[in-house]
Length: 194
Image (cartoon, rainbow, N blue to C red):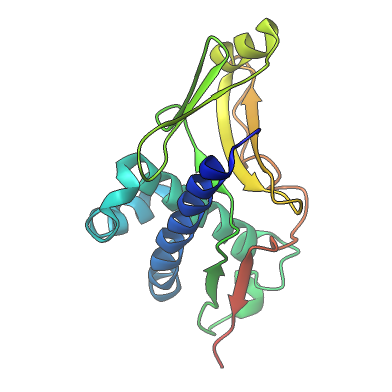
C-alpha cells in the first residue's frame, strides 16, 4: 500500500486498537478454554463492544476470529509445544498479541470498487487507489473471500493480503496458512503459568 504518513499513522492506530481487543479477549480464553469462534463470540462480543466502542461491531468480530484462529494454531496443531495433549491438566498459557499483530478485514470492513479500496479505520473509512488489472478486481468479486489481512512489513510499509477461494471448491478445514506448520507467529507471546 502506498500510504501517506497520515494514513500510515491511522493504520498503526487501528493495528494497536485491534491488538488491545485481542488482548482483552485472551484471558477469557485462558480461563474458559473456549476458542471456538462462535462460542467465543457468544461469550465475549457484547462486553468487547462496550469496552471498545471505537472498534465497531464488525472489527470486534474480526478480532474474535483472530484470537480463535491463533488459539487453534497454538493449542490444537499437533506440532505445537502448547498442544492440549502436552498441557494435560496444567492451565492454558496466556496469549499476548503485540501491537504489530495483523488486522483481519472482511467484506464489511474493506471494499473494492473501480480500483478504489475503502477500509475501516478508527476515525472513519480510508480510501486508496489501487492499480489493479480488471481480472484481479473481478476475482475479488467472484471468488469466496477467506481472509483479508493488513500487516506491517519489516520495512515499516503496510500491505494487504487477500486469500480467495473458488466458490465451487469444497470448504477447507483450516484457514490459510494454519495447517502448514505449528510455528507460533512472531506477534504472539505465550506466557506460561507456573
